[in-house]
Length: 357
Image (cartoon, rainbow, N blue to C red; front, side):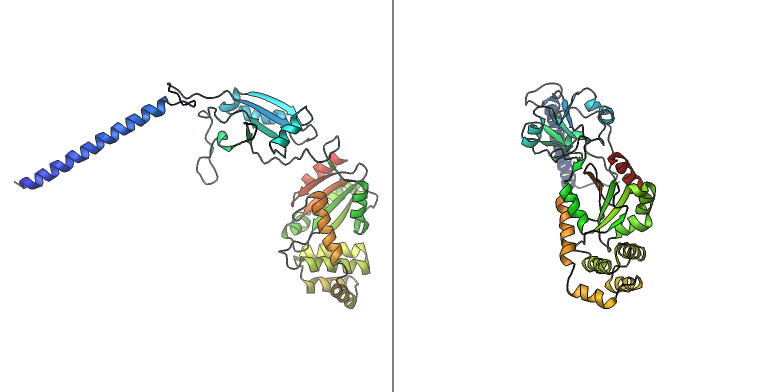
Protein backbone atom coordinates (compact mmCIF):
# COMPACT_ATOMS: atom_id res chain seq x y z
CA UNK A 1 0.00 0.00 0.00
CA UNK A 2 1.19 3.50 -0.91
CA UNK A 3 1.23 6.13 1.87
CA UNK A 4 1.76 9.91 1.32
CA UNK A 5 3.96 11.91 3.60
CA UNK A 6 2.14 14.06 6.10
CA UNK A 7 3.57 17.26 4.61
CA UNK A 8 2.43 16.24 1.14
CA UNK A 9 -1.09 15.48 2.33
CA UNK A 10 -1.29 18.83 4.09
CA UNK A 11 -0.22 20.61 0.88
CA UNK A 12 -2.88 18.84 -1.17
CA UNK A 13 -5.50 19.67 1.41
CA UNK A 14 -4.50 23.30 1.43
CA UNK A 15 -4.63 23.46 -2.38
CA UNK A 16 -8.07 21.88 -2.38
CA UNK A 17 -9.30 24.38 0.17
CA UNK A 18 -8.00 27.27 -1.94
CA UNK A 19 -9.65 25.87 -5.07
CA UNK A 20 -12.97 25.43 -3.28
CA UNK A 21 -12.74 28.97 -1.96
CA UNK A 22 -12.11 30.38 -5.44
CA UNK A 23 -15.10 28.46 -6.84
CA UNK A 24 -17.35 29.76 -4.07
CA UNK A 25 -16.24 33.37 -4.66
CA UNK A 26 -16.80 33.05 -8.43
CA UNK A 27 -20.23 31.57 -7.86
CA UNK A 28 -21.16 34.49 -5.60
CA UNK A 29 -19.92 37.03 -8.17
CA UNK A 30 -21.84 35.39 -11.02
CA UNK A 31 -25.01 35.22 -8.94
CA UNK A 32 -24.77 38.90 -8.06
CA UNK A 33 -24.15 39.83 -11.70
CA UNK A 34 -27.17 37.86 -12.91
CA UNK A 35 -29.29 39.41 -10.17
CA UNK A 36 -28.44 42.96 -11.17
CA UNK A 37 -28.58 42.34 -14.92
CA UNK A 38 -31.98 40.80 -14.54
CA UNK A 39 -33.22 43.76 -12.57
CA UNK A 40 -31.75 46.63 -14.55
CA UNK A 41 -33.99 48.78 -16.76
CA UNK A 42 -33.26 51.44 -19.38
CA UNK A 43 -34.20 54.20 -16.96
CA UNK A 44 -31.59 53.21 -14.40
CA UNK A 45 -34.23 51.92 -11.96
CA UNK A 46 -34.80 48.36 -10.88
CA UNK A 47 -37.57 46.06 -11.92
CA UNK A 48 -38.27 42.60 -13.24
CA UNK A 49 -37.94 43.31 -17.02
CA UNK A 50 -36.14 45.65 -19.39
CA UNK A 51 -38.17 48.74 -20.19
CA UNK A 52 -38.40 49.44 -23.94
CA UNK A 53 -39.65 52.58 -25.63
CA UNK A 54 -42.67 52.61 -27.92
CA UNK A 55 -41.38 52.64 -31.49
CA UNK A 56 -42.67 54.87 -34.25
CA UNK A 57 -41.15 55.10 -37.73
CA UNK A 58 -41.48 57.90 -40.24
CA UNK A 59 -40.78 57.01 -43.87
CA UNK A 60 -39.91 60.03 -46.01
CA UNK A 61 -40.35 59.48 -49.73
CA UNK A 62 -40.58 61.57 -52.87
CA UNK A 63 -43.59 60.95 -55.11
CA UNK A 64 -41.38 61.70 -58.12
CA UNK A 65 -39.20 58.70 -57.33
CA UNK A 66 -40.93 55.96 -59.29
CA UNK A 67 -38.38 53.34 -58.26
CA UNK A 68 -39.56 53.30 -54.63
CA UNK A 69 -42.59 51.19 -53.74
CA UNK A 70 -43.82 52.05 -50.24
CA UNK A 71 -46.15 49.06 -49.93
CA UNK A 72 -43.39 46.58 -50.73
CA UNK A 73 -41.04 48.11 -48.19
CA UNK A 74 -43.71 48.23 -45.48
CA UNK A 75 -44.54 44.57 -46.00
CA UNK A 76 -40.89 43.61 -45.63
CA UNK A 77 -40.39 45.79 -42.56
CA UNK A 78 -43.48 44.53 -40.74
CA UNK A 79 -42.23 40.97 -41.15
CA UNK A 80 -39.81 41.80 -38.33
CA UNK A 81 -41.44 41.27 -34.91
CA UNK A 82 -39.64 44.34 -33.57
CA UNK A 83 -41.36 46.54 -36.14
CA UNK A 84 -44.69 44.74 -36.56
CA UNK A 85 -46.38 46.78 -33.80
CA UNK A 86 -44.62 50.07 -34.52
CA UNK A 87 -46.58 53.14 -35.51
CA UNK A 88 -45.57 53.90 -39.09
CA UNK A 89 -46.18 57.18 -40.89
CA UNK A 90 -45.39 57.88 -44.55
CA UNK A 91 -44.73 61.48 -45.57
CA UNK A 92 -43.67 63.08 -48.84
CA UNK A 93 -40.81 65.45 -49.60
CA UNK A 94 -43.40 68.02 -50.71
CA UNK A 95 -45.20 67.97 -47.33
CA UNK A 96 -44.84 70.98 -45.05
CA UNK A 97 -41.64 70.98 -42.99
CA UNK A 98 -40.14 67.83 -44.52
CA UNK A 99 -37.52 69.57 -46.65
CA UNK A 100 -36.39 71.63 -43.66
CA UNK A 101 -36.20 68.54 -41.44
CA UNK A 102 -33.94 66.77 -43.96
CA UNK A 103 -31.67 69.79 -44.27
CA UNK A 104 -31.41 70.29 -40.50
CA UNK A 105 -30.48 66.63 -40.02
CA UNK A 106 -28.20 66.39 -43.07
CA UNK A 107 -30.25 63.66 -44.72
CA UNK A 108 -29.51 64.06 -48.43
CA UNK A 109 -31.13 61.08 -50.16
CA UNK A 110 -34.49 59.34 -50.13
CA UNK A 111 -36.25 57.23 -49.11
CA UNK A 112 -35.32 57.95 -45.50
CA UNK A 113 -36.36 55.84 -42.50
CA UNK A 114 -36.54 57.84 -39.27
CA UNK A 115 -36.88 55.87 -36.01
CA UNK A 116 -38.14 57.52 -32.83
CA UNK A 117 -35.78 55.42 -30.67
CA UNK A 118 -33.11 52.75 -30.82
CA UNK A 119 -34.33 51.21 -27.57
CA UNK A 120 -36.90 48.71 -28.83
CA UNK A 121 -37.18 44.95 -28.41
CA UNK A 122 -35.39 43.01 -31.17
CA UNK A 123 -35.12 39.73 -29.25
CA UNK A 124 -37.74 38.00 -31.42
CA UNK A 125 -36.22 39.12 -34.72
CA UNK A 126 -34.61 36.29 -36.70
CA UNK A 127 -30.82 36.09 -36.72
CA UNK A 128 -29.37 36.54 -40.19
CA UNK A 129 -25.98 35.15 -41.11
CA UNK A 130 -23.39 37.24 -42.94
CA UNK A 131 -21.21 36.08 -45.81
CA UNK A 132 -18.53 35.18 -43.29
CA UNK A 133 -20.91 32.72 -41.61
CA UNK A 134 -21.22 34.86 -38.49
CA UNK A 135 -24.51 36.29 -37.18
CA UNK A 136 -25.25 39.84 -38.27
CA UNK A 137 -26.22 42.63 -35.92
CA UNK A 138 -29.94 43.34 -35.62
CA UNK A 139 -31.66 46.39 -37.02
CA UNK A 140 -31.25 48.70 -34.01
CA UNK A 141 -27.46 48.45 -34.28
CA UNK A 142 -27.59 50.14 -37.71
CA UNK A 143 -29.41 53.24 -36.52
CA UNK A 144 -27.51 56.54 -36.57
CA UNK A 145 -28.41 59.34 -34.19
CA UNK A 146 -29.71 62.61 -35.63
CA UNK A 147 -29.55 66.17 -34.25
CA UNK A 148 -33.33 65.98 -33.82
CA UNK A 149 -32.89 63.22 -31.22
CA UNK A 150 -34.29 60.61 -33.59
CA UNK A 151 -32.46 57.83 -35.44
CA UNK A 152 -31.73 57.28 -39.12
CA UNK A 153 -31.54 53.89 -40.82
CA UNK A 154 -28.92 53.96 -43.60
CA UNK A 155 -30.14 51.84 -46.51
CA UNK A 156 -27.94 53.17 -49.33
CA UNK A 157 -30.66 55.41 -50.82
CA UNK A 158 -29.55 57.35 -53.92
CA UNK A 159 -32.49 59.56 -54.90
CA UNK A 160 -31.57 63.23 -54.42
CA UNK A 161 -34.78 65.25 -53.91
CA UNK A 162 -32.98 68.60 -53.80
CA UNK A 163 -31.89 68.73 -57.45
CA UNK A 164 -34.26 70.10 -60.07
CA UNK A 165 -36.62 67.41 -61.33
CA UNK A 166 -39.54 67.10 -63.66
CA UNK A 167 -43.01 66.12 -62.49
CA UNK A 168 -42.15 62.57 -63.58
CA UNK A 169 -39.17 62.53 -61.22
CA UNK A 170 -36.33 62.86 -63.71
CA UNK A 171 -33.46 65.28 -63.37
CA UNK A 172 -33.31 68.12 -65.88
CA UNK A 173 -30.72 69.85 -68.01
CA UNK A 174 -31.10 73.07 -69.98
CA UNK A 175 -31.35 73.30 -73.74
CA UNK A 176 -28.05 75.20 -73.75
CA UNK A 177 -26.31 72.41 -71.81
CA UNK A 178 -27.62 69.79 -74.21
CA UNK A 179 -26.47 71.79 -77.23
CA UNK A 180 -23.02 72.27 -75.71
CA UNK A 181 -22.69 68.52 -75.18
CA UNK A 182 -23.56 67.71 -78.77
CA UNK A 183 -21.76 70.64 -80.39
CA UNK A 184 -18.36 68.99 -80.82
CA UNK A 185 -19.43 65.37 -80.37
CA UNK A 186 -20.03 62.72 -83.01
CA UNK A 187 -23.60 61.45 -83.16
CA UNK A 188 -24.26 57.86 -84.20
CA UNK A 189 -27.74 57.35 -85.58
CA UNK A 190 -30.62 59.70 -86.24
CA UNK A 191 -29.56 63.24 -85.29
CA UNK A 192 -33.21 64.11 -84.58
CA UNK A 193 -33.90 61.09 -82.35
CA UNK A 194 -36.07 61.62 -79.28
CA UNK A 195 -33.62 59.84 -76.95
CA UNK A 196 -29.85 60.23 -76.73
CA UNK A 197 -27.60 57.70 -75.05
CA UNK A 198 -24.59 59.71 -73.93
CA UNK A 199 -21.77 57.37 -72.95
CA UNK A 200 -18.76 58.61 -70.97
CA UNK A 201 -16.04 56.07 -71.57
CA UNK A 202 -12.41 55.33 -72.37
CA UNK A 203 -10.92 52.67 -74.62
CA UNK A 204 -8.87 51.07 -71.83
CA UNK A 205 -11.90 50.48 -69.61
CA UNK A 206 -12.55 46.71 -69.22
CA UNK A 207 -16.15 47.27 -68.12
CA UNK A 208 -16.79 49.37 -71.22
CA UNK A 209 -15.46 46.51 -73.35
CA UNK A 210 -17.80 44.18 -71.47
CA UNK A 211 -20.74 46.50 -72.15
CA UNK A 212 -19.96 46.74 -75.85
CA UNK A 213 -18.58 43.33 -76.75
CA UNK A 214 -19.31 40.68 -74.11
CA UNK A 215 -22.86 41.85 -73.39
CA UNK A 216 -23.53 43.58 -76.72
CA UNK A 217 -25.75 46.08 -74.94
CA UNK A 218 -25.41 49.02 -77.40
CA UNK A 219 -26.29 46.75 -80.33
CA UNK A 220 -29.35 45.34 -78.55
CA UNK A 221 -30.62 48.75 -77.45
CA UNK A 222 -30.02 50.58 -80.74
CA UNK A 223 -31.68 47.82 -82.73
CA UNK A 224 -34.73 47.92 -80.47
CA UNK A 225 -35.34 51.66 -80.78
CA UNK A 226 -34.05 52.38 -84.28
CA UNK A 227 -34.49 56.03 -85.26
CA UNK A 228 -35.91 56.88 -81.83
CA UNK A 229 -32.41 56.67 -80.30
CA UNK A 230 -28.97 58.03 -81.11
CA UNK A 231 -25.65 57.48 -79.37
CA UNK A 232 -22.98 60.00 -78.43
CA UNK A 233 -19.58 58.81 -77.19
CA UNK A 234 -17.85 61.33 -74.92
CA UNK A 235 -14.36 60.90 -73.52
CA UNK A 236 -13.70 60.13 -69.87
CA UNK A 237 -10.08 58.93 -69.65
CA UNK A 238 -9.43 57.69 -66.12
CA UNK A 239 -6.06 58.73 -64.73
CA UNK A 240 -5.01 55.17 -63.87
CA UNK A 241 -5.64 53.98 -67.45
CA UNK A 242 -2.27 54.80 -68.95
CA UNK A 243 -3.39 54.62 -72.57
CA UNK A 244 -6.76 56.33 -72.17
CA UNK A 245 -5.87 59.99 -72.81
CA UNK A 246 -3.80 59.27 -75.91
CA UNK A 247 -6.44 56.82 -77.17
CA UNK A 248 -9.13 59.50 -76.83
CA UNK A 249 -7.01 61.99 -78.79
CA UNK A 250 -6.34 59.41 -81.54
CA UNK A 251 -10.10 58.97 -81.92
CA UNK A 252 -10.48 62.71 -82.39
CA UNK A 253 -7.54 62.95 -84.78
CA UNK A 254 -9.05 60.15 -86.85
CA UNK A 255 -12.54 61.67 -86.87
CA UNK A 256 -11.31 65.04 -88.13
CA UNK A 257 -9.93 63.20 -91.16
CA UNK A 258 -12.50 60.46 -91.79
CA UNK A 259 -15.65 61.48 -89.88
CA UNK A 260 -18.13 59.90 -87.49
CA UNK A 261 -18.27 56.41 -89.03
CA UNK A 262 -14.51 55.94 -88.65
CA UNK A 263 -14.67 57.30 -85.09
CA UNK A 264 -17.16 54.62 -84.02
CA UNK A 265 -15.48 51.88 -86.07
CA UNK A 266 -12.24 52.43 -84.16
CA UNK A 267 -14.11 52.32 -80.83
CA UNK A 268 -15.62 48.96 -81.79
CA UNK A 269 -12.26 47.59 -82.96
CA UNK A 270 -10.49 48.66 -79.78
CA UNK A 271 -13.08 47.14 -77.45
CA UNK A 272 -13.22 43.93 -79.48
CA UNK A 273 -9.44 43.52 -79.48
CA UNK A 274 -9.15 44.83 -75.91
CA UNK A 275 -6.23 46.88 -77.15
CA UNK A 276 -5.96 50.61 -76.52
CA UNK A 277 -2.24 51.07 -77.18
CA UNK A 278 -1.06 53.86 -79.44
CA UNK A 279 0.50 51.53 -82.00
CA UNK A 280 -2.64 49.43 -82.33
CA UNK A 281 -4.97 52.42 -82.66
CA UNK A 282 -2.76 54.22 -85.18
CA UNK A 283 -2.55 51.03 -87.22
CA UNK A 284 -6.33 50.57 -87.19
CA UNK A 285 -6.89 54.24 -88.02
CA UNK A 286 -4.66 53.89 -91.08
CA UNK A 287 -6.72 50.85 -92.17
CA UNK A 288 -9.76 53.11 -91.98
CA UNK A 289 -8.11 55.51 -94.44
CA UNK A 290 -6.40 58.03 -92.14
CA UNK A 291 -3.07 59.58 -93.04
CA UNK A 292 -0.49 58.35 -90.52
CA UNK A 293 1.69 61.46 -90.76
CA UNK A 294 -1.28 63.72 -90.06
CA UNK A 295 -2.36 61.53 -87.16
CA UNK A 296 1.03 61.78 -85.49
CA UNK A 297 1.20 65.54 -86.12
CA UNK A 298 -2.25 65.92 -84.56
CA UNK A 299 -1.07 64.06 -81.45
CA UNK A 300 2.21 65.98 -81.21
CA UNK A 301 0.37 69.30 -81.41
CA UNK A 302 -2.09 68.14 -78.72
CA UNK A 303 -4.87 69.39 -80.97
CA UNK A 304 -7.64 67.71 -79.03
CA UNK A 305 -6.19 67.50 -75.53
CA UNK A 306 -8.45 70.29 -74.26
CA UNK A 307 -11.54 68.85 -75.95
CA UNK A 308 -11.03 65.51 -74.21
CA UNK A 309 -10.45 67.21 -70.86
CA UNK A 310 -13.51 69.45 -71.31
CA UNK A 311 -15.78 66.49 -72.11
CA UNK A 312 -14.61 64.68 -69.00
CA UNK A 313 -15.19 67.75 -66.83
CA UNK A 314 -18.66 68.27 -68.28
CA UNK A 315 -19.57 64.68 -67.46
CA UNK A 316 -18.70 65.28 -63.83
CA UNK A 317 -20.20 68.75 -63.54
CA UNK A 318 -23.51 68.09 -65.29
CA UNK A 319 -24.21 64.46 -64.48
CA UNK A 320 -21.97 63.51 -61.57
CA UNK A 321 -20.04 60.94 -63.62
CA UNK A 322 -17.01 59.65 -61.73
CA UNK A 323 -16.19 56.40 -63.52
CA UNK A 324 -16.65 54.43 -66.70
CA UNK A 325 -18.91 53.56 -68.31
CA UNK A 326 -21.04 56.50 -67.26
CA UNK A 327 -24.30 56.32 -69.20
CA UNK A 328 -26.68 59.26 -69.45
CA UNK A 329 -30.05 58.73 -71.12
CA UNK A 330 -31.64 62.00 -72.26
CA UNK A 331 -35.05 62.91 -73.62
CA UNK A 332 -34.14 65.60 -76.18
CA UNK A 333 -37.67 67.04 -76.15
CA UNK A 334 -38.41 67.28 -72.43
CA UNK A 335 -34.72 67.67 -71.38
CA UNK A 336 -35.21 64.97 -68.72
CA UNK A 337 -32.37 62.54 -68.07
CA UNK A 338 -31.34 59.57 -65.98
CA UNK A 339 -27.83 58.34 -65.16
CA UNK A 340 -26.93 54.67 -65.23
CA UNK A 341 -23.39 54.14 -63.94
CA UNK A 342 -21.79 50.85 -64.89
CA UNK A 343 -21.97 48.00 -67.39
CA UNK A 344 -25.64 47.20 -66.88
CA UNK A 345 -27.49 44.73 -69.12
CA UNK A 346 -29.70 45.92 -71.95
CA UNK A 347 -32.85 45.41 -69.86
CA UNK A 348 -31.79 48.19 -67.46
CA UNK A 349 -31.33 50.66 -70.33
CA UNK A 350 -34.63 49.64 -71.92
CA UNK A 351 -36.52 50.14 -68.66
CA UNK A 352 -35.23 53.70 -68.27
CA UNK A 353 -35.69 54.62 -71.95
CA UNK A 354 -39.29 53.43 -71.88
CA UNK A 355 -39.96 55.64 -68.86
CA UNK A 356 -38.23 58.61 -70.47
CA UNK A 357 -40.24 58.29 -73.67
